[in-house]
Image 1 (cartoon, rainbow, N blue to C red):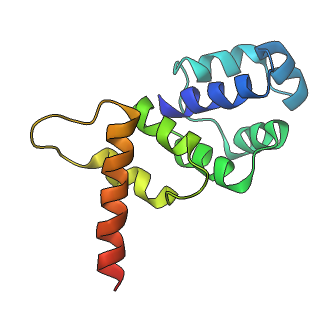
Image 2 (image 1 turned 60 degrees about the horizontal axis):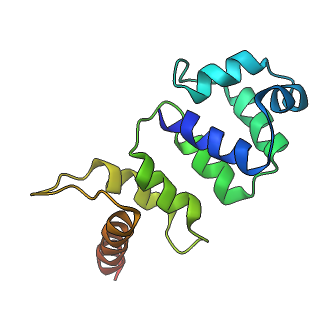
Length: 128
């Protein structure tokens, strides 16, 4: 599950163990572990808010985490948005993920980035 993958990436980026993170946000570390392993998939809004506060996520990263609750998205595609500095609108995540492909589906970060950038161009053309 994508929420757990992203939560794990954010937690590890802050250098927090599961126990430390659980203590800081007041949530059982075993529950966090189950979320990160996709054994649980739908944390409450209050739990997500506690994660956002504890991890001190900027608004874009917080929004990305919230967007992924209950969804399954390709991890490489998520990495493209995690590593992006704000050039790619988060609104493109869902259409990029849901798109059908003729031939080979994007596999690498570079493939996914090129795919999302093409989508951005198409969306920009539609707005004109």
